[in-house]
Length: 464
Image (cartoon, rainbow, N blue to C red; front, top):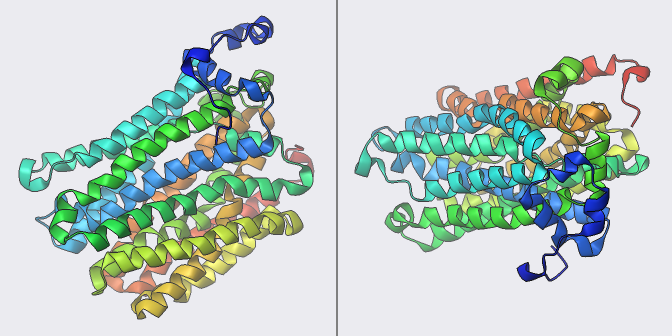
């Protein structure tokens, strides 16, 4: 990823850069300065370098996300909630799963303050260290049988730590990518950050499938499930350096100083862009609701209500995610041709239709499950591929960095945070057809938000 070969002993201050730096940039943290020198041999970072940094960063975040999500279905109900029946234990596990999405906006507020005071590098270093520490702490979680209810509290604390940390991992790279995108290729550039989701799922699902398939049930529950959490910590370290290499480059610093990528106060952002924050939070809800309907929820249903082992379905999930990658890539040129809002609206209608019949396919054996997953991931790729682009394009340049961050937090919380819990609760009590109700509500919110947004005059929209 970082093409240059470097040695810590070769870190020498760049005198010319510091001679022209502004007072504000002179306060840049040591972490930012050192990381900037790693890439100083390259000069200006290309769009390709930015894209690699974006994909690596998002892959690490989503890998952490899916490692926890998979464990919340096949591990924690037995490890942390063994006194409850499997369905209730999984529902409790999903309730803790949602805590990270509730904590994430608070993390954004906290780390935006760190960003303004100490710089982007310090913020990312602290946030990713907290994310890695919270994730690896779960790997050492004792079972309920060893420490009782304290295991539940420790799991909840680690999950909150993950959520707070995720609020600080917003690095502005998608915004930098958008600012460098040609006007006729903005859809293509908007889909690049979204590739991290299916890639992270493929790695997480494959890793869990390997351990489940090759270990006995006792060994897996005793120690096998812990290894993916250690891998998550290692991936976070790699992602940290990949992202720091970009965010401290002269190009990024220039955009930071000009205000294009400068963090603004949450209060000022909401006051100036409140309408866009609300619309941006609800516009991608169809995508975010479907996100969990084809990742976390089907695994829980198959694991709880069929005789199928998790290894086979995790493999189906990983293979289906490849279709998701292809659909995300296809969403780029398609959005450039028909428009991102038109694609998001059309996808929401398709998702609403999908919600009416597709969940029942999970009761159709291997063929039905595979069909549900492939169709779901294709729809997810087309819609999710442009969800961040629609959000970012709604903000003026000055507020784009902070506005995109808090809007993404709210969209994930409302659209995805409670999706596994709501879908499993509905399906467990009223059947699979009821699980589509949550998905249908997300599609309705997307269409309503796009309709309200479409009523703005062209003059009111950002011109960038």
